[in-house]
Length: 67
Image (cartoon, rainbow, N blue to C red; front, top):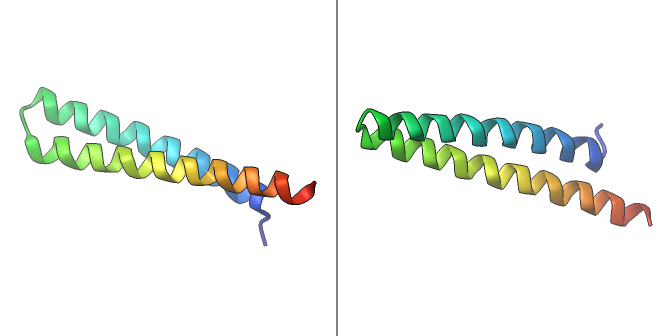
């Protein structure tokens, strides 16, 4: 079983990837005047930010737990 720090790192990496993918998708939607893709991209970007920050919280909780 993974500890909080490992899960936190994993969530930060996955969240960052999702955030970047969403930003690109949203920007492409802007460039092609495709409102649907723009919105989907921004939602994915937001989901990535949430996952990344959740990972940061997990890592912080693990550090606080060790003290």
